[in-house]
Length: 466
Ligand code: ATP
Image (cartoon, rainbow, N blue to C red; front, side):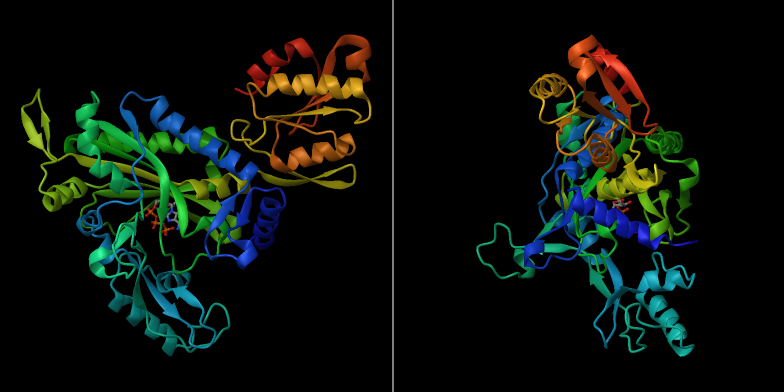
């Protein structure tokens, strides 16, 4: 697979320059694996989030929403197994202190280390060491430590009477959002008219002390997940699992991702409670190829059984018709919002030769574009043009995210909007004022211009920005 290494540099640079993504705390030298989203980044991220919510909740009768807290009772993570085993194998370079994921190193030698023991990992690493192949990814030194387990859980002393982080006063920042869904399963069932099968969807922040977080927003220590937990009778799993796999696949195609750029990865080694697990992987060419974007997993009754056991609260479901009592099984879809953000920018980013110059354009799906319409007066120093353009802007911004720009020549203004993916630019010129109250509407992708009457702009955008 050819690595497009300079594409990621171009994307990172565009994101910073145009205010999509900034490294967090930059004035203090930054904080590894944490990012802030600027104006356009926030808008793009919100539009992706809304596209997911529309598909997963708004258009469905069998899914309801939830926004649970980031902090939960620490026993939540004991019951789920996170405290005992949510970790990654880490090795360090003794020379340059570089940290690496041992499982990722083995995978680069085509040795699968998914859900394997530390003993297996160290045996394989030793074989590579003996053959002289194992080197630090950063400085090339062969002086590496053994692999050891590194917990991904992030600790806090929230609500503790002391600022010491002792085991008994630790509260964790959630490493995934689904924990809150399991804990609110019963409240949701009791407070809505939902019957099995039904789902609870949630979008929110999650935190993981990732060993390596150097791939821009692909892997960060603070990120957002969008998860659906779909509760059902085990006899329904096969059908519903297929249904959700199909629905999620279609969502990617609907928002412009090419079939050739995504594929299914089937987990051969399953967690002990799971019956099936597939990931959708996207071809991040600048990250060496296909990487996980979304997991779609059949989880059995593990989650609710564990929380019943640890809380002492019966989380079983009673089917009134069949008079059957059982712990619901769970089908889950889990996707990282920030990874989707990177995927959509990667897919949209293009450089084209236009009139001997390079135009950088984000060909985003119009529904995801941060700004939908930019409005320009042809000249900044003609009050009539500026007044009319402002009027149009004030009107359109009631319905769409718009931007007014009168700075520089029209060509430069088009380029600025192309770079942030704005699908339409409206220009007020002399014909508008002197002739027929029409404006030019320029299309981002074809760069063609239509002449549209001001009165008809509402209808025009109503049809074109659906
Ligand atoms: P990976 O193998 O990449 O570490 P994972 O298998 O640990 O991911 P899950 O626990 O299944 O990931 O999380 C579900 C989704 O959450 C992932 O598919 C990914 O999109 C997102 N995600 C997980 N960890 C991160 C992270 N550190 N930064 C950004 N997104 C993440």
